[in-house]
Image (tube, rainbow, N blue to C red; front, side, top):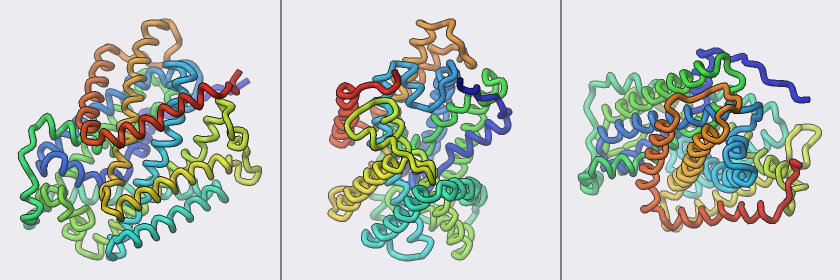
Length: 453
């Protein structure tokens, strides 16, 4: 018999959990791509951040209903099983395991190296970035494989530190009254007049990267007091706070330099920090960004190293039995962890090869945007699934019953479609390749047998 999770989080704690889980390092390196998508238009960029906050809030409220159904816990894979059955749940877990998590880890690892170079004031050449990425990869892999408690400690330390540079630049930048750095001629010339609709659509997926993580907040629905009231309020309040901070951060950057300079890499977050706080304190903020990045990397690695194990627990496919091996010393599924590390290493090698050969110098930005696009397709399926369950199982137990659910679902689907419209046409080849990898998960499912019966 399983013990039922008891409600223990009030509204204040729930709001802090939303902020703590969602805020990451995406805001620090997505300013350039977002402004590039908007043609250097700062107003369009700010509007995109606001719209992304609204879309994420609506999506989270819709998903909170399915998260509150029954007693099953386990996150996105479990929600997907509830909405559309075991096959779809396995498919979602497969996408998370082979695409989403290793690609996001690759992005964080790469930008950890980039910000380290800025802190150390060394040129971020490919060999340097490869060396730093390898160092962090080995260090954190060893920390999580050999000492489970150390990985958790690293995560707790990074939670507070990551807010320091974000709030520092947001607050001091907004009140900055010095000279505004102008973009170089080379940066200004490529900036063209981009229509409002096209600019927002192109910028939404990069912006949604910075809001990524909201789905994990819905997994605590059973542990929140009075969830019908407090979880939606926590989602709205927490994401409103995050959206406000992100908007202030963007305004802070634009108070120091023109949008075109960020769009074409004449300026970056570290340079803004140096202008606002002086070189020494600016470098200190860069160091905090590195810690924030590594904290995010470690947190997702903790989750990712267990994902192959979760798949193997559900289905008996070739090699799955080995993934179920758990170390008696660290209580970690070691072969599952090594599988995720191998996928991460593969994506990093491919990324650096493509970047070094100039085939795609922005490959790591694509690594960040592609899985977000894929996951929002899955979210859209869940939105429809929540509506379907409301119609087919209206009397099923729910801690949360979203009012005006059809309206929320339609708005969430429309927003998702708009974001995908701005992303997929410009990245059709990589999207098709990743879709083929994703669909291969259905083949694995078809050729496997259930372990849950």
